[in-house]
Length: 365
Image (cartoon, rainbow, N blue to C red; front, side, top):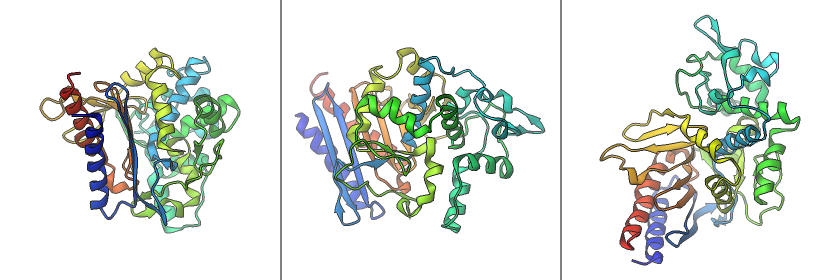
């Protein structure tokens, strides 16, 4: 088998999946492994009347959380914060007062930065309740800070800090506000300053908050959440914030992921902690643990052999950004529709990683 053969197989799998599902408006896939000589960057579908193009900027939803976690890691490496710091060190009294009252006890002062990163603060999710309000009232607007205050008034914590993994955006809103407290700049400005600009991500920007260093000649790809065109909700940007705001072409997500894997943006020991301070996630039939916005596939005999193990991040709209160590492959893509939030992971493992492993075996590596 040649590297062009495995690329053709992966491309065929991808295009067939997209063409067979009428829910998918546009989809994108990048696969690169220098070890195997594989390099694929393809697109299928349309954004409006525009044929999908591999260089279109893409909003990979919660894949943006890994950028936020990395930004916190950079500040950790610079000595500007510690993962073990209480969040009360950086957040004002209005935010902290009664932030976490569970079973009659106030745990607000016990929440640490690492609890936010690995989603174990115990705080409830505010994104989807507020999205529902926007759907019912398209004119409804709320800031990120107001969203947290709304959560204090309308929701209750689900567990004590450190006791349970509860995935959501609330924790990452607080991380963004911590960045702003330390740097005295907007979270989005700091993301450009410490991540996008140093890495040369010239077409990257933060949804509705910033502009790229260089405007793309291609339109940003369409994205659909629960059958709703994301472009119809201009007021949703504050709910993206530090949880899901990053927009860039796939090859610039690749720049970021390569820098992360090769310790170009974080110290090796910092990335290791981000990976190892993890908690199991509740996905049936697949072993997945969650670190500091790092999803790791864990070996499960027969169901998930060790050779499939990889790590990265996932977005609710069928987005994924992973590194597969055995084949040294970067796999980044999106089906841009929330109906694919679980199917995208299965596609990545069964149709991409499996083909790469088969090709690697065929050439004796």
